[in-house]
Length: 215
Ligand SMILES: *[C@@H]1O[C@H](CO)[C@@H](O)[C@H](O)[C@H]1NC(C)=O
Image 1 (spheres, rainbow, N blue to C red):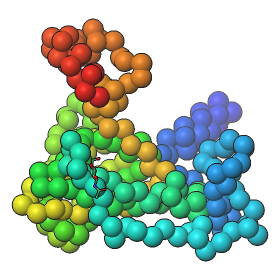
Image 2: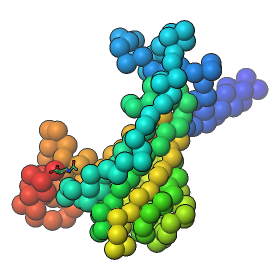
Image 3: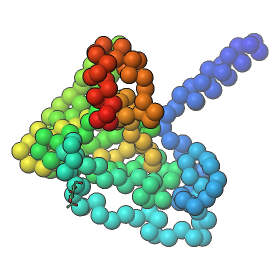
Image 4: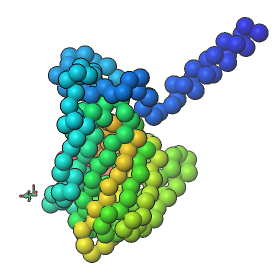
């Protein structure tokens, strides 16, 4: 009987540990104190008496990001890095601009599910399911369309219209994080061994070295 209870306890503990979303706040707010030396899971709280309206405020999300770069896209974040009042609240948003043919390249958010809506233009969006299926779930979106990228899955968006495109996304973390696949694989510092990557991608090592120089 005791063993069974211990097993049940372990089972519920492991279930708890598998919950990936941010934890619920235990107070009205915990405005991030960027100057604190305290290291916690998130950021330390500023004294509530010092909190101002501006801690919950950001302006400028109506301004288009500069898409003059190799990818033709630009993300403008409104996460805890820009809005300290988001700390511990488990939510954030990002404006994304896309030049014609612009791409927000395949990436994951380790801590957030994302919900995207198209404000201007036309986007091809998609995500790929985990091994072993690796199924591409993809759709072309128009203005007002909404699409969801489940937490942790690799996803991308591409402008398939003739004009600029704009999307606004919401994320289920104040600090969603982003792992861009190309940067993580070919831009690691220091490099992942080119022999390892040549074997992983089943290509000549020189191709890998070229990619590593690019990223
Ligand atoms: C956009 O970025 C490009 C490349 O960095 C730069 O040359 C250009 O001046 C920027 N444009 C604006 C309006 O900031």
